[in-house]
Amino acid sequence: MNYVVLILGMAFITVAVRTAVFVLGDRLVFPPIVRTALGFVPVTVLTAIIVPMAVSPHGQHAELTWRNPQLVGALAAIAVSALTKRPLLTIAVGLGVFFLWQGVVLR
Picture 1: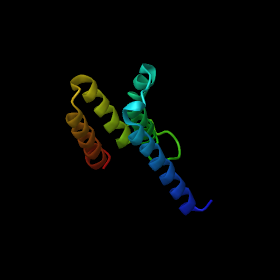
Picture 2: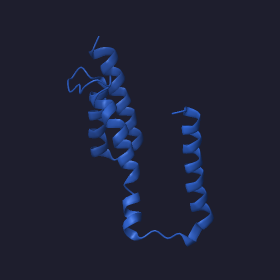
Picture 3: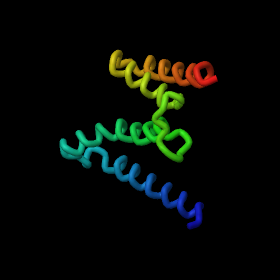
C-alpha cells in the first residue's frame, strides 16, 4: 500500500474524530462505564509500549536475564513506583539504574 495514502487516511480519521468531539461538545455524553474504561487507556497504552521493549529489547525473543539493562531498569522503576508513587523519582531511578547497569555492571 502507498504510504502517503496510509498517512493521509490516518490523518483524516484523527481529524474527523477530534472534530466530532469538539463540535458536539457537551451534547456528547459518555455513559459512566465508558468514562471508567477510558480512564484505563493511558495505563494500557504505556504498558503495551514499555513491556515489549523491556522484555525483548532486540525484538527477537524474550531476554529475561540480569544482562538485560532495560529489564533491570524497568524492574527498579516498578519497585520505586510501588513504594513512593512519585513519577519523577520513578523515571529518574529507572533511567539511573538502566545507565548504571549498561555502563558499569555489563562492562
